[in-house]
Length: 298
Ligand SMILES: [Fe+2]
Image (cartoon, rainbow, N blue to C red):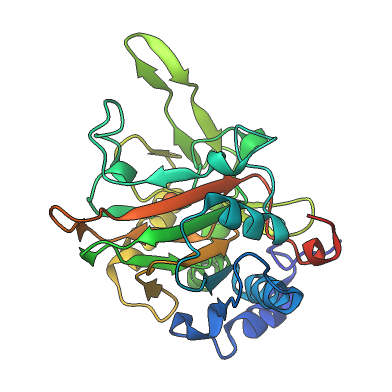
């Protein structure tokens, strides 16, 4: 099958790029589905979520009041969109959704998702082995922060386009099998996670783009090659600039985003002192969102 992601297929790529960028939204308004009954999400609502994700690789939803704290409901919604297999737990139950909250739990307190610090641009699971890449992701807000905690998201197809438009050689460099390496995680002499080397951009067997990326400078090794370094810098510069393709939104209680593991980051936040703390559920899936899910039994 000819792919528009191949550098040889210039006309195919240009047609896909133009379709992708046409009338690209600057806010998430066009990407949100208002769900009437969280216990029974309608076929039309699921279809709207899936067709939005098919175009933008992400879709937002809004659940009615009082129906947004039950992990089973969120888990079922993800399932209906084709996100079924949670990473590290192929028979995932609803409790496999991770609760993200500022934590003083030993081992979590220094890990940024469990702090109120700014989280830099990344895709989830960039340190996973090639067999366990994360293709789908869910973030659901139970309780927003008092201030801050805004999410910024960019469809990784768009990042690909911006890089290819700047210099097609960037794409070639980022598709190199050793473009991006995460060194082994060693704690007290024990290897917790082996070194993971791989592509930044890869095309899946069904023709979709997948991206492994972290803007972190520490604990990330880029291939020592001039073009790779330039591509790395291009992305770092992109995060510093305004771009209409960065969609910003602060999830409110009962709202969430389902996505094909797009690029995202989070601003710093402040919790209500003495009140409820910001709480988000996160699911990481080996599946992509799947339009065919609508025709399958959950
Ligand atoms: Fe993330």
